[in-house]
Every structure is written in C-alpha cells, then in structure tokens.
Length: 610
Ligand code: BGC
Figure 1 (cartoon, rainbow, N blue to C red):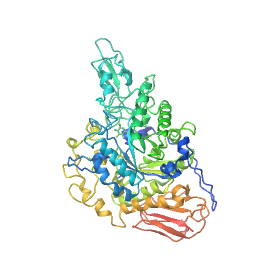
Figure 2: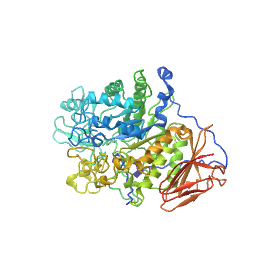
Figure 3: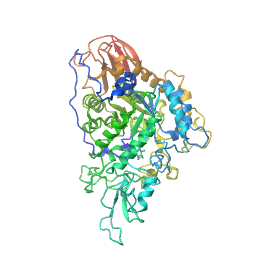
Figure 4: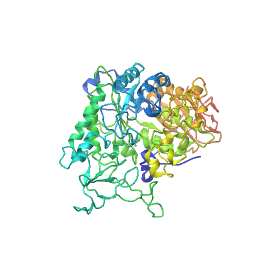
C-alpha cells in the first residue's frame, strides 16, 4: 500500500510547499570536478585548540533517534527508561552510531508524551533520575556515542511553574512570558471571539480562553502547551540557562523542537486559507480550513534567537567534554533557500544541522525528484553540511510512505543507501535498521496520541510509528516484562533484532555495513556528491569523490523491474573503468565495470572505481 502523506509534525508544510528546482549539475564525460570545501563554521579560540576529529565529528555523523518510551523498559512498567537505553548501548555501538538524540525525558504530564515539559532541569520519574542520566552519558561516552537532548522552546506544559504563575493574575511577573490577548469584540461580560483565525497544528483554534484572568492564550500545539513569548528577553535567558545545565552534564548538543513556530506576526492578522486547483478551500483532517502558515511559521525573529543559542552553546567546548556541541533543527520549511538560511552566516552561525525535509518528505519513489533535491542539498546550501533523514516519531515509518507491500525491505535498502552514501550527516529512527512497520491502532478507543482522537479516522495519530522496539520474537518483543504502553505489532515474530543480528543478508547487517563504509571509505567520508546519468527516470546514480582517493559509484534502482545502466557512456561523467564491489543488494545487483551495472528490483550497487 502506498500512501502519500504529509505529516511532518502534522504541519503538512508540503501542502503549500513551493518547490524551487535548482539547475541540475551533470558533469561532462570524464571530467573530474573539483571538491567543494566543507562547511566553514565560526570557531571560538578554545575550539581551535581541540582535536579536529572532535570538532568535526558532526560533519559525517550518524545520529540515531531514540523514542525513550518505546526503546527498552528495565523496571517492568511497560514504559522504556534511561537505564534501558544504557543497557542497549553496545547494540548501538555495534551499529556504528555517533550520537543518540533522545526525545524529551523531562518531567511532564505527558499529554504530548514529553513535549509538554513541566520542569526543564530534571528527569521524569517514569524514565529515571538525573543520576541515571549521568550514567547514560558516561557509558555512552566510553563507546564514543554522544547524547543529544530535545530542546522544546516554543511552549511549555500548562503545568510548568512559569505558566501557573502567568495565568494566576494579569500583574504576575510571569504574565508576559506567554502570549495573552483580548478576544475580538470582548467586553466586560462577553469573551468575544478568539483574536484571529490562527489554528493549532493539532486541530481547531490556537487560542484558549482563560476565565480567571479573562484573556485568551496562544498554543500552536495542544491546549496544554501554551506558547512562550519570545519577545521577552527573560525567556531567552531562561533557555540559555537550561542549555547550560545540560551542557555541563556532558550532552553533545540539542535538537530544537518546532523551531519554526517560535514567533508569530505581531500584527495578529488572519492567515490565508489554502485552496485546491478548483478554488475550493482545503479542509484538513480535523475538519478545519487549511491555513497557509504565513503569520505563524518561519517568522524572522527566530534567526537572532538561534544565533544567541549558538553563541552561548559554542562556549561549552570544555576539556572534560571535548568537541563541538551540535545544534540540530526541526526545520520543516518551504524551500531550499529557507533551509539554507537556518545555517546562519560565518559571523553569525545558527544551526549546525537543520533537518533537510525537502528530501525527507518526498514521500514517493521518484528518481528525478530525489536527484533534484539531493543536488540541491549538495549545491544550494552554501557549502554547509546537509542533514538527511527519512522518518521520525511524527511520521509514518518508511514502509507506509515508500513501501509497496512486496519489496519493502529492498526499498528500504534503496533509501538507506541514499541516507548513508550521500555527503553529510544522517539521522535515522529506532527500528528502521530492522525494518519495523508502521502499526496504527485499529480502534479509536486504543489511541494514545490525542490528535488521533481529535482526527479519527482520517488522522489516527502517531502511535503507529511509536510502537516498542522489537528486540526478539517473544510476545513482548524483549522490550518489557510488563504490559507495554503500546502493543507490540504482530510483525514482531519475523522482524526483530535477534533474528537479524547474525544473518549477513538481513537489513540490520545492511545498515551496519553501510554505516561502516560511510565511516571508513575516504570518498564516502566527505567526498563531493555528483549526480550521474541525469536523464534516467528509473535509476539514481551518483559518484563520491575526494582528491587522492578512489571514486565511489552508487546506483539504486527505483523500480520493481531489473535495470542495467551504463555510466561510462560519455554523458554520464565517468570513464570506462573496473569496479571493486563495496556493497550490493542480496536480491541482485552486480557490476564488473562502470559500463554495465546490473540491478535487480529495487537493487543497490556500490563500488570503487579503479
Ligand atoms: C515534535 C512533536 C510534538 C510537537 C510539539 C514536534 O515537532 O516532534 O512530537 O508533538 O513538536 O512539541
């Protein structure tokens, strides 16, 4: 079953995404194009003294997203915990990851499963303690794995002390930490209407009436997640302090949640409604008109904030925890230009790695679109390091967006090859490496994610991509001894780590092999990425090249039919040469020379040019 969904934090930016197609850059036959310099980011004096390997670790990083609730439970309560992650570090080391990003583990009422934070400087008892966290960081460090945390700055929980204060009275010192406004037509006795038509990304009006102080507050997400007021300098100071708290504990950086929604247009003007080709207003899964996001998304204020966060984070290259603290952005954006802006400038850097959702949400196996977007990442990001990814805890897994139900595993080999064999950092989601399948609830009463209740049946929520990690074939998948918070999918019997770890043809072995190549083959470490055979609509081919190192050629078949490509035919950019195989699909792929690369259905071939 192939679904074309657009569920980036259900933002559905792609509904109104303007695609900017960059000019393709094929090379003339036989020419060796020059290698681009890697990202030039401003370094502080103390960084300059640090080992360059520690400084540059993020440029070719493999980052693994852990959804702690679903990874490994050690106390039998059916909810994953920090000790569970620590217990599985050897597995992650063997897989070859450089860093793990933990979705929020802070105290929370868990309306949005941790994205509603009530205390930014502690660990939720469900997940463990600060001591467990410190042990995780230390044990991960021994295995050269950095721990990255989620930084949720757009909103807090309604249970956070700041909001409790803020809503207590109009004169409270925390009142202007949040976004309070009078209603439209409000009088002493009538609350009027919400200030404008802005909507929550989780359905319906983004304004909630608060009877006690008789004003509305703004919430881009759930009602229980009031938005902070980033025009208040005290909010900036509070978050720099929070970042420092975790940096001192040795974290390797942060992933900035929902960062494009930090600011709103001060005019409070209504947003436009999105219309379809017939001029009819598009209605979203919650039954509301789809709005264009023009007043509440990607507003200019966020750049100075990120410059400030970057400057304060850069200070923390301390000897005890050497190396760059990386800033990753959850950057659902409309164009490659907007993405490029997220890196900042050499003098005022912002993110090291804003997520490239141009590639992440293509949502169909279309070779020309992949070629264009990958080419964009290589040439239109001002020499910065792209961060590719394909899924996360907010989007259906790969099978639901790219699979055909028959070749899902081979299709995943295609996607993972694109992820790990193109230049830049790669981010993937727990369970991808074994081919875990999206398993949404089948009954409304089983739904845990509140948007699945509001939007049922069109929007079933995000439970389907958050099911427990499948460690073995047992009923509870080796995840827990208790009652798992979400049921293990029936596929656990076939799809699990135990079944794959010693099988050289398994998907898990494929991921391990690809990651090893990314780390060890010189052209794959940082070599330039050049698309080849650029008119081919069925096979995507590219070459990685680094001066003084053998070129690496990669071809992936986007179809269910076998394909043969000739990449040495003059127009393709490589000379007729012998190939030394580095990796090929177990289902079929082979090549002896650059002139005849044979690929089975969704086959992958990667070889060194000699
Ligand atoms: C997170 C979601 C969360 C939302 C609100 C997103 O970007 O990835 O899981 O629901 O932010 O915090």
